[in-house]
Image (cartoon, rainbow, N blue to C red; front, side):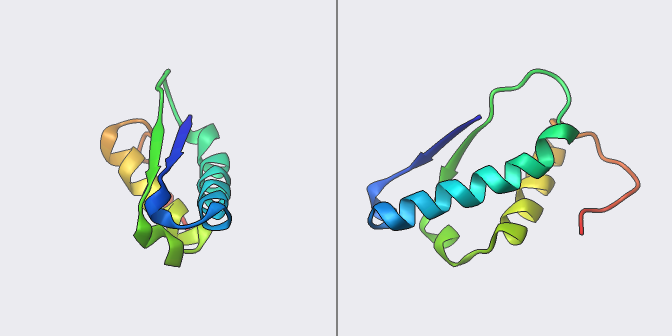
Length: 77
């Protein structure tokens, strides 16, 4: 997994927060991932307002749509 945060996000504190939020969201979803994929996440300015649970929900839906996570009967809370 790779994470990229540009200077447009703000200072080092904001960029590091975005990286921590992405890492935490992916940590919960990593066991659900199937196959061998290289995932790269790009933090955008909108992410500064999001909480990790919202990022996790978005990440789950995108990874499911891409086929990295197989859709199951249970939804992400």
